[in-house]
Amino acid sequence: MEFKDYYAALGVERSATQDEIKRAYRKLARKYHPDVSKEADAEAHFKEVAEAYEALNDAEKRAAYDTFSRRQERGQPFTPPGRDAGFEFSGRDFGADDGMDYSDFFESLFGRQTRSAGARRSTQAAGEDHHAKVQIDLEDAYRGARRAVSLRMPVVDAQGQVTWQERQLEVTIPKGVREGQHLRLAGQGSPGTGGGAQAGDLYLEIAFVPHPSFRVDGRDVYVDLPITPWEAALGATVSVATPDGGVQLTLPPGSSSGRKLRLRGKGLPGNPAGDLYAVLGISVPPADTPAAKDAYAALAKVFANFNPRSAAEA
Amino acid sequence: MADPLSTPTHGTIVEEEMRFTLIELCRVCHADAEQLTALIAEGVIEPAGSGPHDWEFSGAMLSRTRTALRLSRDLQLNTAGTALVLDLLDEIEDLKSRLRRMGAR
Image (tube, rainbow over all chains, first blue to last red; front, side, top):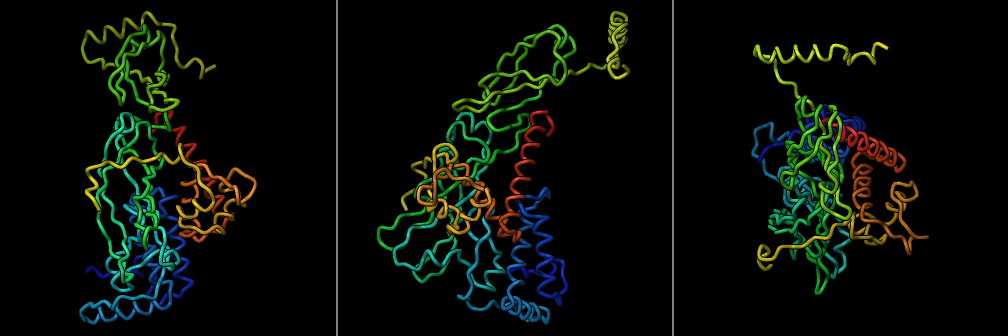
């Protein structure tokens, strides 16, 4: 098991005061909190910081950790203490499931953590609701799909110990689901305790795998459409890729770069369905042969009075 | 548990098909009524209805409530601070959405 240096994770000295630890945590939490951070790997980083703070903020835990790390330094084998029943935490709910994702190191030192003792006090209690994230392809949202989801869930056994259980679930992705929406799977959370108690529900947050060509904004989908100068000037019928296959699009004559052409109802399906926007970009062919140079020269001659900068000069 | 792969599980889209009572929202968010009442008083989440007994929350409130609770717990913010962060996050999302429409990646 890997030894974790919680002081290094917070960037403080071993002699740091509780105030210094708190300050260091707050600063790092603002930097890496997945809800506000722009950093790559914010989530993983935040988990490290939160775990370190959880261990060092509590005087008792910190003392226990210091004792173990001193023994570790003296080369004594790392032997975790017995399961510690004393602590209760609120958990972090990022990542694959809603359970507390503390490292094995943390759990062996402080015991496995359970979220809410209150819910288990009565002999018959409804199971807890769980939250998880699932990434789907944009195409799945267009057509609907079935997705296998693996979950890691904390399960409380008869002795009150928490163990992790892996489970696979086959989930139907409804057509037209949007990024950030949640699916509620009734009865797929923790089982209830005691006879006849209701199981909790599972909430899946939908995220889209980033697509190389389509950008999604709510129900609407955007795609870049490169066109030639003559298609832009004269108009043309071109084919445009959509997540649901190619469609023909009529370009009006005199189209300019940046213009958006709307394909009504070709965005994400739903009621109402979203729209698909083709964003035009004029691609200019290189003048790399004598014939091509002649063609540009002929254009220059015909458009001798055209000055795209005239507006800027005026 | 019977083989779960044999029957796919059908989900309900929370934002479109669900509404929550105060008790239900507390349960889903692992929060107590006091925490949610404070968020309501600050205008972070807005229920329909005249009082706690008939408050009704739209499905979209789920994700907002959970974000608010995470922020206040992890960044140790008070309710006013949480409300401010959420407003700024909304504004950032709005700007990002404008960028997406303009073609920036």
